[in-house]
Image (cartoon, rainbow, N blue to C red; front, side, top):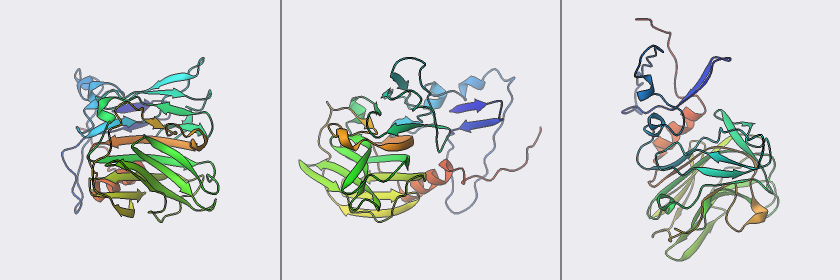
Length: 286
């Protein structure tokens, strides 16, 4: 998947490679020639077939959130980069879709009105295993005994919670086997305002785990199956029915998988998305 800025000579590329070693360096080669007729078979913008082929079959939704505001109206489409077409409908104040993100553009949520509705397609009704991922950058702490909803639907949710108005913890909510599991104190790392942080929640049918940046930050034993929520929409920056806990700050690169991503996968994604996974060699001309 691609995005180009010819003026600044920058490119944002999401690529799929067969494998990357976690013990030795892996050499990757990028070949380019704009005269090749088959370029568009391998390189494409978001919502194109090449872009969809970047993601494995366990990704149910990938929202880059780089779209910009319309000149009129309050709604705009956010395109799901996978083949599942879980596109989002953004209800945001004018200009709030034009924020500088961790990776290209992002959405800047105002804490009171802004949200993205990604619908209720059956592939978002995840029940056996799930991974929720996002980059977040709060404008301010939620306040004492308050929280910010980042992403989720009524049976699974990733959010940030502050008990005392200063320390902010990664938190999770699940409904499992008819039981409400609200984990607002199972992680330890303090998440700070005005600082980009990658947050991840996983559930594998046995444990709920929270990751901050590239580190496992909390674990809670909880066995079972996530309850059915097939009729409920999935939101970014909002949790259905919680009008007072909308996210205040920027959100970027939201991903949902119907599998449990490993610590190695989460760590590699973190390093890649903050542009610290690759070292670039010199250009070679054939």
